[in-house]
Amino acid sequence: MKTIKPGLATLDTRRVATLVPGSWRATKQSSTARGYGYAWQQAREGHLRNNPLCVMCEAEGRVVLATVVDHSEPHRGDQKLFWDKSKWASLCATHHSRDKQRMERIAADGGR
Image (cartoon, rainbow, N blue to C red; front, side):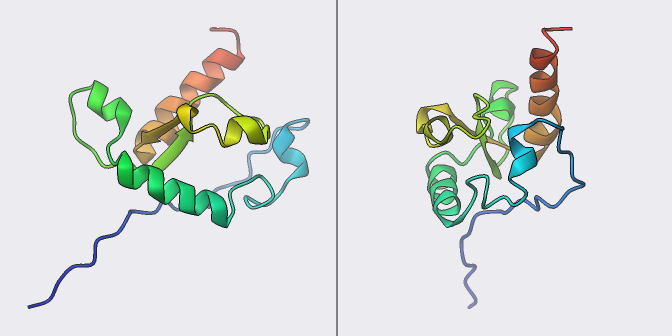
């Protein structure tokens, strides 16, 4: 009998560069330089292990595994805020890449 090894889903984060001139990201090209290195990967795995469901899907009455640990408050390079676990939320890729980004754009535009 073959057993299936449990594991966490991973999200392919390769995408077209979307750096905004003057953004804190513009000076830090790699994800590791922005704080997403080994320590983050370990923390992310632990968070998803303890909080495996997308909180936005749960709010909609659906049960979907999360693949992303989102910083519910944008940290913009602030390492204290980056590592504040009380500001982390488990999200599925759809909610993180579509809905959460839309919410942040609206907030940045002053609600317009």
